[in-house]
Length: 355
Ligand code: IPM
Ligand code: MN
Image (tube, rainbow, N blue to C red; front, side, top):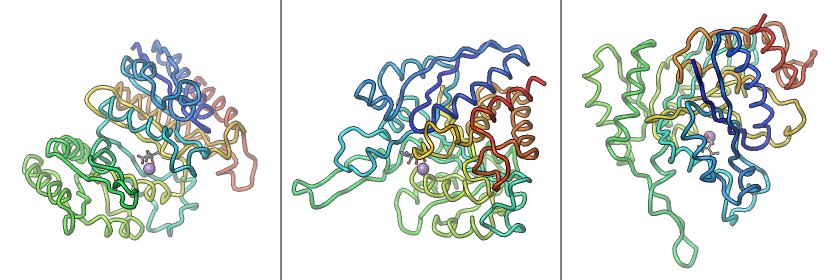
C-alpha cells in the first residue's frame, strides 16, 4: 500500500517521540512492503515561533492532503502563565481539529500485564480493564459563541452548544464500536442540569432502537468520575461531549498504571489523526528520556483505523508488550532498574519488528 503521512511533532517532547514512531512505521513499511512517505510541518508553539501562527495554512495544506496525520504534542510553559497572550499554542490544536473536521476523539484505556501493579487502584479493580471513550471534539463549550468578557472585563462567559447532527454522528461511532466490542454503550451527560445534555440523552435514546444488540446506559458525568475509579471494568464504550470527555479521559489515562502510555485517534469525515494522550512534558524536552510508547501505539492505531491493516497494528503492540516484558523501557517505568533512552527504545522496537 502507498501511504502519505503528515508528521506534526509540535512542542516539548513531541519531536523526540514522533522520531521513534517514524522508526517503527518505517520498519513496518519495510517488513510488509508498504511505500510510506512522510511530510513534516509545524504546529503549536513551534509554529508560532516559526510563522507567528499556531496552525499555519501551510501546515493545514500538508495535513489535509495526507492519508493520516501523526501528531506529537502541543504546549509551552512560556504561554501557560500569561492569560493575556493573544496567540496560544492550544489554539493551533483546536483550529486543526476544526479545519480537519476531526469530530471524534477515540481514547482507549487498557492494561499492560507487566505494568498493572503500578496502577493507583487495587489490582482486582483494574486488572483486565478495557474501555474506550468517544469524546466529541469539535463542538460544545470549546467552540460555542458567544464567548468572552463584558466591557468592564469583570464578567466572563462561554457557551455550550450542540446541534443534533453533531451528537448523532458521534453517537453512531460509539454504537458501531460497541457492536464490535462487549456491546455496552454508556452515554455520559449532565441531563439533570444542562439543556445540551438533555438533547444528547434524547438523541441517543432515539438512535438506540437501530442498534438492538447494544445495551445503553445513561449516567451523569459526576457519577462516572466516581465509578471509573470504583468499577472501571463496568465500562465498555463511553460517549460524551467535548469538555466532559477532556476531563474524564485524563482520569481514565492513568488508572491502568500506564501513565503516559495511552494512544488516541481523532476521526472525522476524511482525515484521521493519531496522537499520544500525554502532553508536551516540557521538563523532559530534548533530554532523550521521554517515553515514546504512547506515540508508537498511536502509530499502531493509525495502521488499524486509517489503513485497516490489522496485522501491522498487532505487530506494533506485540513489540511494545515485549519491550515492557523485557524491561527495555525508559526511566519513568523502569522501577529504578536499568533504563534506556527514548531513541534507544525506538531503535529496539524497530529492530524487533524487522527481526
Ligand atoms: C487534550 C488537551 C486539549 C484539550 C488542550 C491542549 C486544548 O487537553 O487534547 O485533551 O483540552 O482538548
Ligand atoms: Mn485534555
